[in-house]
Image (tube, rainbow, N blue to C red; front, top):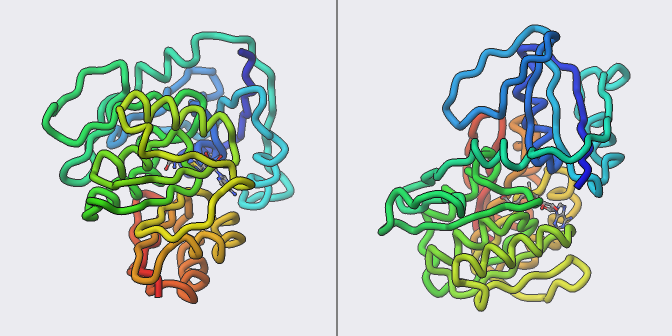
Length: 293
Ligand SMILES: C[S@@+](CC[C@H](N)C(=O)[O-])C[C@H]1O[C@@H](n2cnc3c(N)ncnc32)[C@H](O)[C@@H]1O
């Protein structure tokens, strides 16, 4: 399959932030190069990385990805709006996925939950293990936005609960909820590839009979005990009344995909619908959560 690579000029201060932006816009992999073209592959969580003063952050997208939307979003948040230096290039197929797979290891979230690449050994067989192959969808657990939601889900008692996963991507949050005891999960995504990946992962984990998947146009009306939405701040703002309409009175809501500087304003919007808790921060990202009024 051909790929599109987006190269974005950065420096040691901005490299990590831009990498987060490219991941949040659906990059399958993000790498960094210096002027001498020496790559650093996406670091594992906790790894220290030193960036060069002239860094290029490169996001790899599949050829069908809507790059106009990505560029428009980057323009809207880039500090040098008029002078954002980027380049798009078409790449021939290479073993990109192999490189990415080598960097994906089992990760623990909260007290009980492990996300394990489906091709690796499970470190704790008695823990709550989600076996995952994200395929072309977003959601491995390596990104702070996903990690914030996984930790939140791990802290809930989900036994017998109905959960909505808005923007389900690889299905990672849906599967975590089901493995943590939820009775039923409804996953919604605008990207058909995400629904395919979620279905395949649900089958891999033996929970496909408890996961229903929908495109937004087909989404059912229902009231859930728990709703989690890891999409970007823009859609979370636009969709606030739709997303909160899924949460039953007294039910719980978590929102992610939000940069730290966007957290307070978005929390105020959701405060109309929910009693919001203090904001939780991880790296430059935040999670908002609360209880439906
Ligand atoms: C950041 S990923 C999150 C994936 C996964 N839930 C996770 O936590 O890693 C956001 C997902 O939301 C989907 N998405 C974006 N806008 C959406 C919308 N308006 N309605 C439903 N899904 C949306 C994207 O296609 C993408 O799969």
